[in-house]
Image (cartoon, rainbow, N blue to C red; front, top):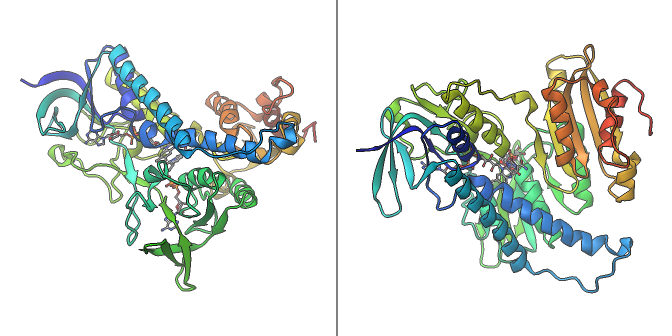
Length: 467
Ligand code: FAD
Ligand code: NAD
């Protein structure tokens, strides 16, 4: 007789494990199926967490190398212990994946390790590493199987010399020459890590700008700053192949529209042209669900077309972000429990953890123009912010876009120190549908970086005071 559950969730990433916690809190008998031996999904195992551990450590390394002396800190010869840097990253991953295991126990969620597949209405079968199959029966099935690296035809990933983000988190030595295919979030974050540790980094990007989905002014400034740090950008260019020789790699490129062939030398190539939904062996056909051409499973308030089957996270539409998956996980569990689960897709922040950090929420100036909306802009540079000046972190700015008539904040974009933390103020403001004046008339502590947000908000009505 199969184990009986109210909810069986397939996939133990931020979408799946947060759905499980909320379902457990709401008293639903819940099971979580995960094919990895650890929980936490892409985010905790090979994504957000290990990349941020390396970004943090490599940023301190570069600070010590370039800026400590100016602060009056003399530390003698600096050297890199890459093994230790990788080990502290693994520690962070272990601590957090163990933490998720504890949370499952605390919320009475049964965890089944093995490959989960839907085996008809209300049935999930789990095949473990030894080939043993367990049948689970469920009133509700939640698909939370996440995403995988999008491959580039003609470029074979071996995770040693031609790597995805997963291989780029465990390189055994610092490459002399690193070529990134794609100037998106992964390229700029992991490219920054290896550049700080000594790699010469070249980025080949198909489109005519780096970070193409960000506000145009922000991505332009970001590219300039990354160039100043030593990265080379080859825009409007595509990689047509990577040839593996004994001593190195030959990366063939040509202009995006064809022609103008050029070859680059590299020790390591990082393929980071995006991620795609992961639906392999999921048994979708057994309940009549068809993914779209790109592999996404459509949803209406997390419901798929099949009765009792729900979908959340990277495997369905929307930004492929851990906190989006988390929001959907909690809201989906609430809907299953008969409550009013809801996600506000207009207020999902996005952060690039480079130095400076880049963060945004809501609409970009380009999107507002496209929609023909009338808007006002307030901008404030960190060069004029006292805390930024004190900390010698003066690159970047805050930009606030507000409706021309109602003054409601429609978008916030920050490139600068701690942008990833600062953006939360604008996200909360947008959740409350605040006007820019609400922020402009809110007292902010001095001296803080957050004063730059207030000054930008004042700028919307033209009364910035500190510039
Ligand atoms: P996942 O985290 O991918 O989890 C899905 C889980 O399902 C996996 O553990 C998988 O093993 C399991 N699974 C799949 N199929 C089956 C099956 N049939 N049976 C059993 N188990 C199955 N996002 C951010 O918000 N901030 C960041 O800083 C950030 N950094 C990133 C850095 C990198 C290098 C990468 C690659 C991604 C990063 N992301 C970041 C994106 C983030 O990791 C994803 O958006 C997030 O993990 C999606 O969560 P999810 O639960 O939908 O899927
Ligand atoms: P991305 O979509 O951020 O960037 C991919 C880049 O590759 C784009 O600029 C695109 O124009 C370019 N590109 C596509 N095809 C190309 C080609 N053939 N040649 C050259 N360039 C090409 O994707 P990513 O950087 O791989 O990241 C994947 C996902 O992971 C993203 O959706 C992102 O949201 C998530 N992620 C988030 C964070 C974060 O939140 N800090 C960090 C890492 C990853």
